[in-house]
Image (cartoon, rainbow over all chains, first blue to last red; front, top):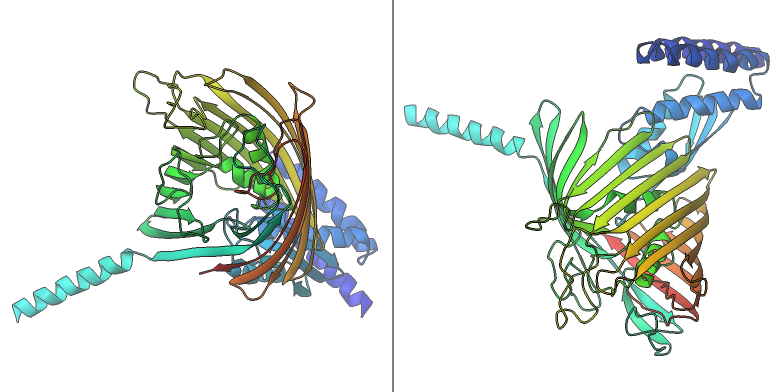
Length: 128
Length: 383
């Protein structure tokens, strides 16, 4: 069972690496090698010990990267914790529809097996 | 038959026009509670007398009570036209909130804007809450609320710089600006920029009464960072006894400079924040100059989606006179009864020295130069 998750995570990490570097490519020559380097640095320990802190941190970073692509959601008010493939979301979003949206985005990240959603709504200054 | 077709065509045309109209939303919040405070004062003068303890029904324990109308029209091509009309009012007596002129109320004193948005971000023109306040709110665990927060601390600086509190025209920074044109950029990897320019509209004085501000924000990985620069010309021209005594004329003097950097980090239910601010001002009336420092720290914990506790510490220092300084602590608990209603309880303590009179809650002046404690319980409902 553990071996299967190892393989799964490795594949997920590799897939993410490929997609990340492919995505980073058009941004500019300077950022592309940096992204690829970061991805391979993350992938190496992930292959050795997938449930280690590094793997959790790598998954956490990937979830944040996915959330921050949404123009309306501020990922600075959201806490993402990853343990194995289980992700816990706490913190706040600026409207009720974003609670489900963040969960959906997190579930769509390769390597995420479950999402515990404890997000609440905090309207920006002057609101509810 | 032809007529029938004609009217049908007209009907279809109108129907599609109505569809393109998009929606208008009427919305608001009503917030009221009971406040106890062990000192009070009649005004924001640094030498005001202590009038003793006070029990009162108090509006706006979290933020002010408001109502407004907002709407968006999709004009195609990814562009939208947006408007927002929003005014604050006091639940105690139904009176509207402050405008930029003492003694005159404004129906939409918080927002009266029209603007557009699209790939470029958004531009809004009219009276509005300025970007610096959102930046401060995003980097304060207390969220720049009306009770013991970065907002009341910043207002404390304004009071120390001679703001009589009778209009929203402030000597240090601003909460609202009239005549403002505000640009908000889209986010790039969590980073965004907001720029404000408010032409003064003063005849013969290009710089007269203008406001300029810039805010740089970052929001990703559980971290909010914000940097603020605010600059105003001819700010706070009104004496405390206006209109008996006249306002100072606009001469284009740069007399309001506010700088702020802040950060807030959120992880596993905990939030922690800190900020540093420097500001200077010059009174148009007395020509006195002011130079202040403000430091904040905050810590909060979300126990469950319905219940959270937040706390903050705020320190003000007068760089021109070391006798004037102020420290405040505030703790608040908020419990959500439903998605639209919350109850809250909060306690604050402020130690004011010299002529400082940092308040605990907006709208309830404290006696300068001494310690004050305040407690409030209240309810806030959105519609």
